[in-house]
Length: 278
Image (cartoon, rainbow, N blue to C red; front, side):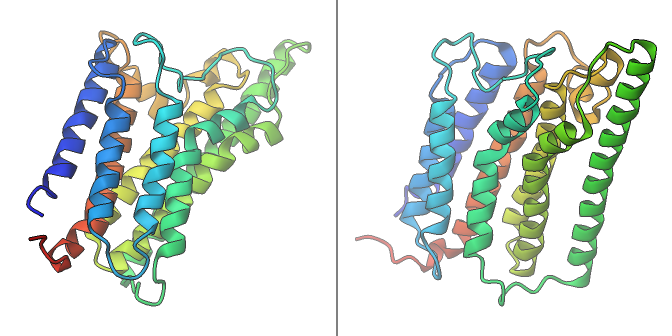
């Protein structure tokens, strides 16, 4: 089928349109994200790799559902931005982290479940890189937890009546993003072992997405003012205030690029094995 390579290219173009709309605050096509994922789904369905051909389409279906449910009804409204500073709900951090991370987390779990572990033999450099990256992710989470704990204690000493999130609430906010980050690192090692280097690059991008979701989940808690801007990735997004939504646009671009690399990396190498129609 000669049209097959056009599908991921068209999906990439629609993803760029969607990111541009978020960046400028004037969405050109509200359904662009859904349409891009549907094109990737169609691409995965036209090429049925050996082993478990249902894995990639099933994972993409989850992403399509998530993109559809978060598609704003109004062009000026983006429902997936759920941060509400000053909220007192103790479960808000966990809910925010889960809401942001559930779809890519399910995708990673499906791909891990469908991966042939016996065939994946990552070399020592890949394993060392995965262990180092996991250590850095864990250290980042621990530093955030300690920083927030010390800041809340200091605020309570200055003003005994002031509140703040407990360590349990902070840890709960990190659960879903950390699960996504560690799962993506394991997937990266397995894909590297199977020589799916393009897909492994997409899994690495999901680690960055997970860290940003971790920052967003923490930012939804009732933190002291001087800790709310201490998140590394979230603070970096506010470097350019001239654009309406530079941070969400960058995050969305990285996330959609990760999905595109994962699908193309897992499917494209089997494309030549499919017998041409007609």
